[in-house]
Length: 122
Image 1 (cartoon, rainbow, N blue to C red):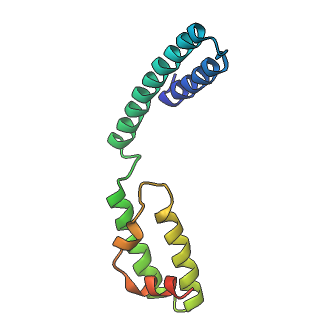
Image 2 (image 1 turned 90 degrees about the vertical axis):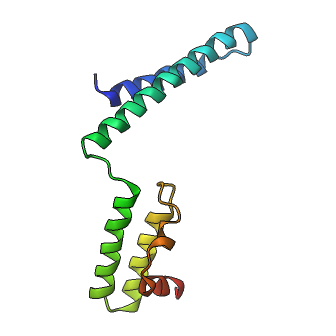
Image 3 (image 1 turned 180 degrees about the vertical axis):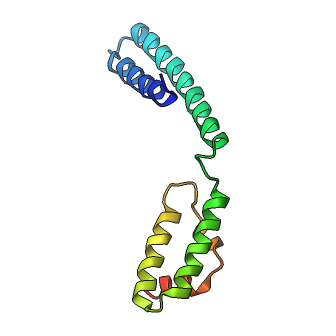
């Protein structure tokens, strides 16, 4: 069984344990104990999966993403001359970098004023 399958299985086990809650303090205490135990198991599985992805080079760091985005922004600045197209691309990139992706605030760290200006003008 893969780690992802094991994580999915723990999600099912947690869901099933939560469904057994009846409002009975004694029975619910046992269900909550199962939930907590399964959540701890899930946490360890996810931690192992992340470590595996990082070690195998299948996951990139935030710094690597910023580096890639810097190259993309510079390329847009060099090759896209229409202000409306620049602004649209800027909004798209801004959206990617400000979502809950661990890259919040990254847009401001990209020091490429030509795209920030077109982003602000829209």
